[in-house]
Length: 395
Image 1: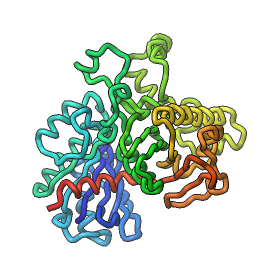
Image 2: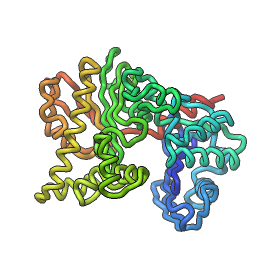
Image 3: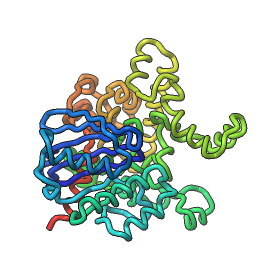
Image 4: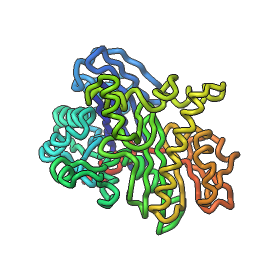
């Protein structure tokens, strides 16, 4: 069983070819600058190949990927017939989808209705599906949603304190994102805990970041909201902010509504506060050299993660494990240390020696006597997509 995993963006796409039974990845890659000049980075057979080639549209980009998988020295399969099904990452499933689904016209129609909730992502996700259906008409396509895992939240968690008709008429509510990552990591934590009734907090910390409270494998609350802008301070996103700031900035900086939202999405967060970069590695390095804004940036990032952990500990009525995942969560020992510092009252006791160890394995970094486990668990969103695709399309 081979699943072609596709994550189509507005001018890029990521892909993997995976056997979901073994989790073996035959090939992976990234296509960038679609519609500009085109660049492919393909990894297969322990080799990385870079190719600059004209890709006017997503269709040509996907055709080039499929050709790379099947021909030449980088080939890993004989033909596209060896691909059993295609799994698509979809950012926003709204309230329509609480689980992954086989793609048909009804699914595409519903996703098109949700475009206003994810105008930068859903159009590209839909386009990827349509192209795969055209190029591989006999293969089933499956949509796997970032939002689906959070559909178990109660109304008290997902509703905003706005007039109720805004929810009824316009779907204004918290949806949450990073669902495939939170699902995978929380399930891995439950295995490590070997415990039926589990209370887990997952910190997915990357350029985009979110925290999720998971009880018995189900999301009960998460930090991202109607859009990925809500919640933690991120690479270029502001995260939680007084809504009054929007009108204030519009007045003071003579911005339109769209301009101020773009400002909060793309020019704020780590980049805006530090003035250095959206890459936390560069900010940590500057902080170690005494840059005060970099130090402030790190403290703000950690304080906000800690706020969500404490809030979700209250909602869960205790915590069995705190999990760190994604690029920052898996690799930045300084962030993990600062987040856990001061949480001893919750039974959180970090082992500093274990914390500085870096590898690609799931690991426990708490002291032996710690009542709350602290895990570093590498996320694997592609496996979740491949697994769901396999389960929905196997004969």
